[in-house]
Image (cartoon, rainbow, N blue to C red):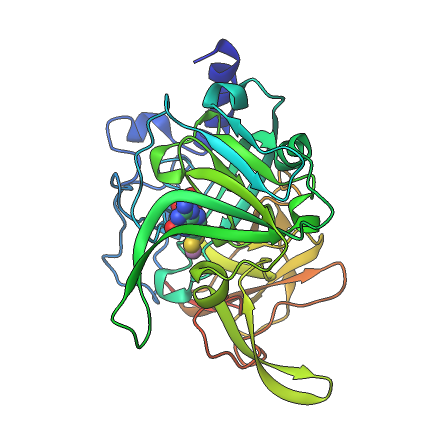
Length: 389
Ligand SMILES: Nc1nc2c(c(=O)[nH]1)N[C@H]1C(S)=C(S)[C@@H](COP(=O)(O)O)O[C@H]1N2
Ligand SMILES: [Mo]
């Protein structure tokens, strides 16, 4: 590891651990205790099982966060949620190649070293799985600093030809898909696609690093796509091929799975409409209440597709909406943590947050959500209950 990398990692780690009372927890594995300031206590939500806890991510396994642990801007790599549909492929780094194929002036192949020697940038991006939900207390979520190559540079190096309309990203992982009504199975790679114009957005990154460390195995080592502002499914891990074509890509994760089915008005007609899960829908959620003496603090996160926020507000026990304080480290595509001090009376309380963007779009309540038949995109307001003793 280069000195520069060590310095970057240390700088990021420092932010991660800044809330930690080091003396108290030095000997305890860090996932057992959420990062608490000296004397601070976590107040349990009454909508969570009393013994609710999540262990650390296990190698190779899916993982989600105990969102009560969210206390800092960057999610530590070992806490960041892990989702994959075909298992985690082990890639031999010496044999690794990224291929760029299809409707380009020049097809290309890159070794890992080629990629590492290209010019790098970094960007903060937070995202959730399109299937994240209240049942997991919104735990399929995280925020990280990604460092790597601009996707646009790789596309331009090959020269996308004018007939190219769609860019397909293939991972090294594959699985067997049964064909409906046929006694047949086929082997398919995980893949997602973007229209060429979307792929050319300057923020799209082919990430080699996450929070200052080489991309961990579970997060796509050695290379993954991150499309800031999109749900997690767009962020193809273990990326091995980029293919440009002149047709829509209809693979499982574009055409069948991660497809939202909701009712929409289509030119005055109410119709059921299917769409691939793409841009993050405006969402906020309260995830943590802490107490220092009698002073309570409410914490939550906001996710957006990059549209700037106007504010995030909290209503307690159905009372007036009051503006919460946004973490000043928030950037366009990061998650935005928010906090509010609270001086509660003993008893049961309900807490809910709502985000509003600069266009005046207010996060929906459950009742206002469009009628939806699929389980994807759960962005309704998320009321929490808590008992103060
Ligand atoms: N190659 C590959 N990439 C993938 C997936 C996968 O199954 N295979 N799952 C996607 C989904 S559905 C999500 S939510 C994110 C999760 O990213 P993370 O595990 O780094 O949090 O990866 C995406 N990228
Ligand atoms: Mo996902």
